[in-house]
Each structure stands twice: as C-alpha cells, then as structure tokens.
Length: 350
Image (tube, rainbow, N blue to C red; front, side, top):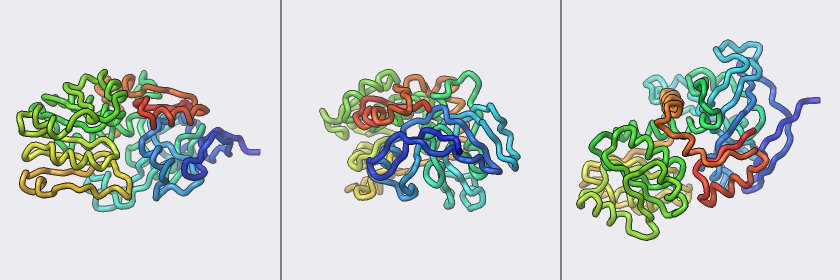
C-alpha cells in the first residue's frame, strides 16, 4: 500500500479542500522533495476562482515553494543531495529556442511550469522532473534563511526582472499602484535601487496601513482622491518617471499612462482578467509623450538567484512581507485573509 500525503485538492472552480493522495514516485532523472512551505500567490487565487488555461482540474497548485530533498532518482546526475534545502522556481524553460539562447528566458516559447503542467506545492511531497533542474531556477536556500521566507523568491524574481527593465535609478519618482505583497516588494526594490521618491497607491486602507512598514515616501488612498490629479500635484505637473501596475485592475493601466511623465516608463506587471484586458487607454498619450510601456510577468534564472540573495541580506524584507504562516489545514482561512486584503503574503506550512 502506497504512502499517503496531505494535499489541497482543487476539484473545480471554488471547490477545494484538504485530501489524502498517494505520495508521488521520485522521477528517475529527478528528485523528490518534502515540501516545507508554499506561498499563496494572487495567480493561485485567480486559478481557484476562474481557472487557468494550463491547469487541468482536478489539480494540485501552488508554486512558491521551499522544500528538502528526500530522494534522488536512480539516474539523477545533478548536484542536489538528500537533506539539501531548496527554493523552487516553477518556470521550466526549453533552453533551445531563440529567446533562451539569447538569455531572454522569460520569453521562452516552450515554457512550462510546475503547478501547471505538473503537480504543485500545496502538498506534503512533490516530484521535481529533470526538466526543472537544468537551468538554475531551483537553488539551495542560503544557510540561516528561514525556509518560509525563501518562498517569496519566486514573486521577488519577477519584481527584479521588471525593475531591471524599467531601469529605476537615483533621480526617479516611482509610482506603484497596488499595495499587496507584490507592491511591497516593489517598494523595497525601488528604495534599494535609490529611487528619489516612492509613491504607493491602493483602494484598500488595510493594505495601505500594512505597507507603511516598508517606508514609502507617499501613501495614496485612491478611494479618496483622483490618482492622476494627485500625481501631477506631487510632481509639479510633470508626472512620475517610472510606474508599476501591481494589481489586476484594468483602470490602473489607464491611470498609469495618464500619470506618467513625458519620456516615462510604465510596467504592466499585474495580469488582467481575460474578459477585461482591453482598457480604454488613450494611446496618443503614449505616442506624443514618448512613453515606454513594458509588459512583464516572468523572470530568468539569474533573477531567481538574485532574489534569494536579496532576501538573505534583508534588502527584500521577507519578515515584513510574510504576514501569516498557517498550517495547510487552515488553507480556507488563508484564502479568506488574502481575498479580504487582511494579509500581505500568506505562507502555508506543510
């Protein structure tokens, strides 16, 4: 009789619970890990509520993972050993397409992901295939780093990639729209890069209060004011140099374009619902104001490695971002916290 493990089993939209299933076999060229912690991402919430094109239900999702190697396959030839504690980046690149060859891994045309094409991390054990172990998106957790904090390396890597593209620098006024965990990581990174002024905006007062600990220069509650008008006031009519939309609301992409300085750069970081992804943006503002609008949703292996290093040194303050660590049996409670804006990052202990 096979050993059983606890998983959060997503049977259908908004239909999930704790169940017992068989522990997966170790891939012959891969590894088996005991999952230590798995973070709850906004994309997990969207998958639970609306589904995902790559997730075939019933499914086990969860892609912000830390774990410990408990078995290596009989044909495994990598450098991880039993007992190694690892942070798992879920992206699996082909390594062969034009984009991978040029180092633009986030644009890989054959990209697959753990927790989409394979079982995810809301499970006590997880099989990691050979394909995930070849290009550096799985790394040893630095010694002394809390394994629950290592889970945010995945979202942090995406933020690092975005800010690299924006080229945030000393003279910049940076506007971040969205005060969730992603927005807070962006605050920390923008300040670490030396931005002159960091502005955070949101409609949720609780989230805005939680983000104060990251010391943004200005906090704006968009329920109480017109964001575009306020940004123009703050910047003497010029607009923000760099803008990040760290949320899933279409209106904020419109606000970003209207709040930008001439020659400014905007990163559309948060994905929109598929039926609300064509906001009424005045593209003449992009044209005549010489704006650069960047789409960014992923990262390369170097960003994942850098994320772990920045978390370990405290430049990305994981202890402030991870606001709730819950047992996996309290998954419903964690989802409620996240949906209600009563947390930043919820992480589950397996």
